[in-house]
Every structure is written in C-alpha cells, then in structure tokens.
Image (cartoon, rainbow, N blue to C red; front, side, top):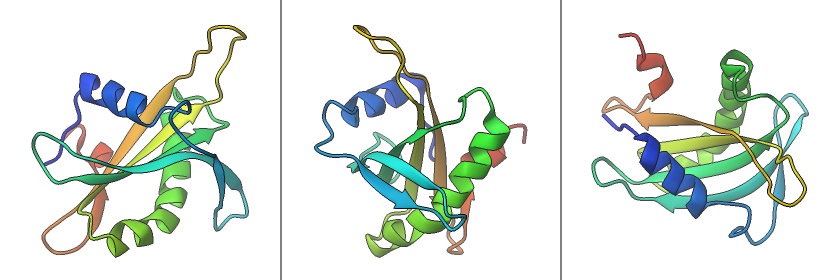
Amino acid sequence: MLRITLSLSLALLCFLSPSTAQQTQSLKLPSGRVIKVLGVGRIDFPQGPAALMLKYETDLKTSDTIALRKEADEIWSVFKADVEKQSFKAAVLSANEKPTGNFLQKSNGYNFVYERAADGRWHCLADDKGK
C-alpha cells in the first residue's frame, strides 16, 4: 500500500511549487466550477508505484477536510482518465490554499492519494484511516 510520509509530501510540494510551474491552467469540473491547476507531473516513490500528481489551488481551507474531500472527489472524476491513459496505478491530488503575505508568502496544502487495486477499482487512501 502506498503511504506518503510528511517529509516526502513536503518534497513533492517543493517539486511542484508554483515557482517551478511554467504556466497555470484552468480545469472545468462537472459542477461548472473552475479550478486553477498549478502543475501536473510524475512522482516516484522509494516504495510503491509511481504516481501522477495534480497540484491545484483551492478556495477552501485545508482544515475543512470534509469539503476538501468533496472537491478532490470531483476533480478525481475528471483527472482519473488522464491517470489511466498514462497507465499509472496511483495518483495524488494536492490541494493548496491561495498564498497569503506580500514578501514572504505562505500557503497550506493537503494531499489526497488515490490507488488502483488489483481488481482495477480506485480508492482514496484517506478512506483507510481508522481501519
């Protein structure tokens, strides 16, 4: 099972930070909402399969994990096709609050990891918490 440690999550966020993204793009969701995509890229883990990561900006607070999960699931309904087309068995949706501050900017993030089971079904590892 794919697990992301805090230090690995921080490394991933640095890898796909807005400063390294060439251009931001928009992604229209089934609800009609549009999200700002900060970057998409492959990430390799020391253990487990490589994953395709989509880093996006959210209007939500990362502390509101229930609303954030609903948003991630809607994004997943669109992003899953790209993940499958590129034959990945794992994906990460990285929700990032809008940066605050003038000189030094701060932004909180929250990652949702989706993994494909042997039977082909996808599930979010957040669902495994508490099991």
